[in-house]
Amino acid sequence: MRSTHSQRLENFLGTQKINTISHSMRNWYGNPIALGCVPGSVWATRGGDFIGHCDAGQAGSIQDRTEDIVRRYVRQARARMSRMRVHHGTCYAGFASLSDLIAEATAGKRREFFFRKTGAGSTIGATDSLWRVGALPPAGAAASAAPGGIAPTDATTGAFPFTNPTGGDTQHFVMAATACDIAGDNLMLYDRIFAVAKTMNSTATEAVTGVPTRYQNTVAGSVDSAENNFLFPECGTVLPATAHNWTVCLYTDQAGGASTLPSVAGNSANAAERLDLPLSSSWFAPLVAGDTGIQQLDQMQASALIASGTIDFVIGHPLAWMTHPLANALFIADGINTAFNLVRIFDDAALAFLIPQVASTTSNNYTGSFTTVAG
Image (cartoon, rainbow, N blue to C red; front, side):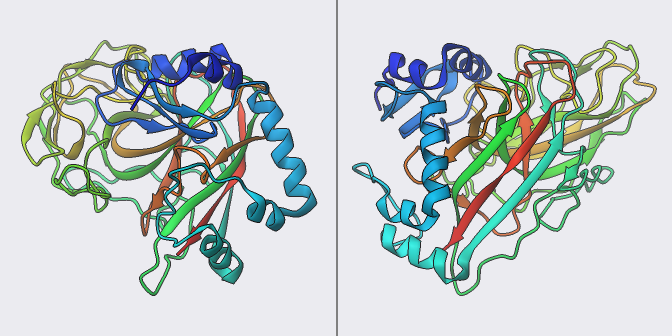
């Protein structure tokens, strides 16, 4: 797939947003991640490049497009769907056609999920988690202790509760409308598939026996492949001022092979809700060269005694980027006419948000909703 028309993409999202996402993807090891806010089919790739075609940016920005979409939704949401332009090559995963999608949505298979989160605020350029903060959904639960850990589901405190589709239907993302009270922050929507609490004040190796229940297929390219699964140490409470590395951490890679996580530096006095990773990686721990995902975590170890605080090792699966170029403005992530094209939301998914490379040290607010349809 060819590189995206860079000027159109910058005109639409703005140079700052493009640079932030590009930097966040610079060391990414997995497959491209969809930009859910860009018309066409644009993907952020490893190395920080963008591929696919951008059907916007010739004249208007994301703000112009968002305002237009909102006006049309206010007039008549259902009419908007029936008039929606469909670009060549669109694949209606789980639906025979756009008409079938509309029919399913109006037959009671449409679901709305609302959120309101207040970030903790940490370090500019770091990545913060919105899992353990409120208020909607409520603050998420800490992970269970090793060796078992927990494989979160929609029933886990902190996740968006929903009823799984029946009759062989699958659930798919249609759109999101999100806002932030600061310009510059991105949201990463991901499925939180596993978490385990690290025993603190210990340098001993610690086995992990629990495994995720989603995205575990070792066949490359399968819809539930372990490719793109990523690992991060999530700080629940502030850490003491102790230099430390996460080292001799073992994992099973996307193909089922045994691997050792490259040693990665934690942060002395790391803030609560900040991922305990250096700014150079920000939102994911590095894997062995050539690996494109982590199927499961097998062992944890810290290089130094960390006297207090809490750390959960979390495995997630990225779904899409959502951007906020302006403060206090609603922006649409289109799940039909973008690369985030009706992506599947698996049964029992524990959907959550990260803020890769936060733009401010303040406690910012994130609000909005997203919509799925089963078919």
